[in-house]
Image (cartoon, rainbow, N blue to C red; front, side, top):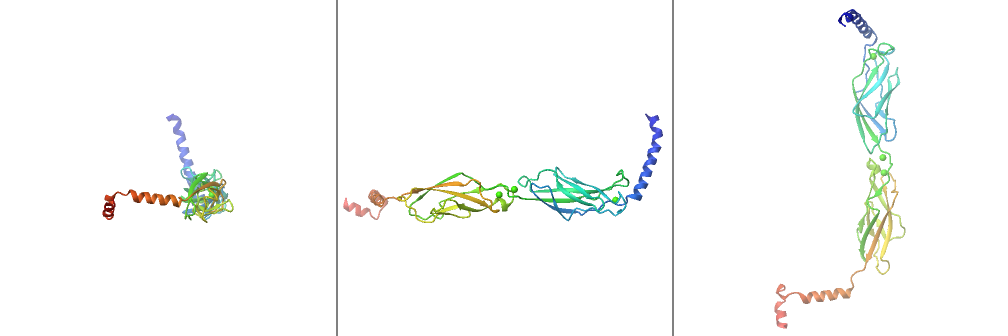
Length: 278
Ligand SMILES: [Ca+2]
Ligand SMILES: [Ca+2]
Ligand SMILES: [Ca+2]
């Protein structure tokens, strides 16, 4: 081994010296990119809009290879993005998603990008790389999900003759990732001609006094809208039972009974009167 290796050593050293000289002449500068980029991508698409645009500059331009940009590389744990060179001479690049971007799974990404020139020779040897730039990407939401009611059916009971501020509250939720497309902005009663109204928080109230004799049960259908105007696919049913008020005759009897059964010891003011009677 040692005997065979000895003659090769000088040859390798010579090649190395030659290579350095070529590099010094032909590829003097490393590419330059901005220090940071901000990107926006709409979920379910693959195009990233970068600000500023991704362009690498190389002072060796217009020297072939040394002044051209051959690659952008991305460093970052599992960043699902790639950067491609659109134009080697101008250094223009584009950032794209490699796989599906889902806002509901991840809303933003941060990683590092680096530009590489084409080296000193057609083989790409002696390439230089730029400094590392930080890329921050924000994922824009698409209104894919409709509001869903927490319960398919709601029940409540009211006493006839009363106006309630809120008989009950229904609630819907939405799976989208942004406030605009996930917050519930409005509720609506689908059933027509009902003595009920619903507010933007899902509170249902009666708009007139209800009568047990007239109708003992109401069933109304309600829907919900997210702030992007997308309506619930499934409406919810709300059942409201009307209870009769207590009969005045019965109430009077109760009061009479109550008065008569009060122990005299708990009402010292009336005790002498009771004593005189009995
Ligand atoms: Ca260069
Ligand atoms: Ca939505
Ligand atoms: Ca979405």
